[in-house]
Amino acid sequence: MSDRRLLLVHAHPDDESINNGATMAKYVAEGAHVTLVTCTLGEEGEVLVPDLVHLAADADDALGEHRIGELAAAMKALGVTDHRFLGGPGHFRDSGMEWSESGAAQPKPTVRDDTFWRADLTQAADLLVEIVREVRPQVLVTYDQFGNYGHPDHIQAHRVAMYAAQLAAVPSYRRDLGEPWDVAKIYWVTMSLSRVEADLVRLREEGLDSPFEEMGEAMRKALFSDDDAVAAQIDGREFADAKIAALRAHATQITTDGPFFALSNNLGQAAWGFEEYRLAKGTQGPVDGRGWENDLFAGLGV
Image (cartoon, rainbow, N blue to C red; front, top):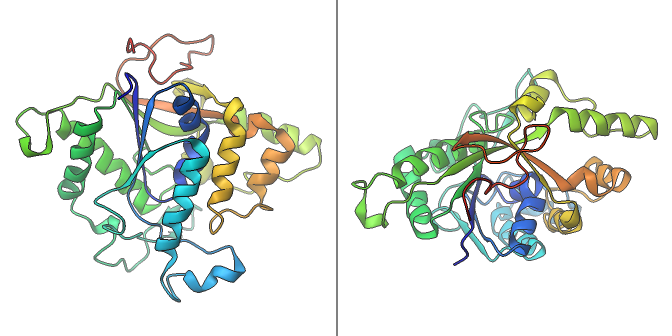
């Protein structure tokens, strides 16, 4: 196994490509071992392909199985060969969500008992503890405590990832799950507010709409970070095409004529090539003039 090992924990298929596609492709190309753990099949997602609407949860309820194939295609585009579902495919069901008055996501009034949102935290964390101890990553990437925009599965993924990282390091905890491993650095995904605002200016100058233009204040505060809160930025512009290919693979969830593809078409590789992170655990390594790392493994000596 590579000397550098990166573990990402995401809620649904497509979350990884949206948030970290360029980062994943970059580290794979550099020889790092990249492991993706996806916590649900995304069964409750909206189906954007007219010919596939029958897959939806309120119809054939077969979207999850279909999205397994979409995720595999996306990982092929990024070069990631180690991708898993927490507990196995379908072990936890997508919890679904609804939009709150503030514009953020929130749980539905009624949530099924077999959903990830209702999972026992320790039991779910133990499934990830075993993976952490097997892979032994120096770096773990997941969401912040709000799941970045309030989706219950994102919040639960944060809780499970953070708790599992803590438990995995305890020598006396569940020795049957492998030898203890302490993850050196944990990052939460984010986007630089200054970068997004600069992109908005460029789009306005070209007379184009932005996917972030009509976003509510609650969502803006949740998704974007001031520069002094950002710890690292990965320059993955060389891998922007791979990221876009991965996004296209998630065809039921991301329409190719939608605002996100318009963003990439009009701003070029910079729109999807830069990915930012907040440091939740560990010591920041060498930084640039902005106070940002350009490598998630910075300072680790690997």
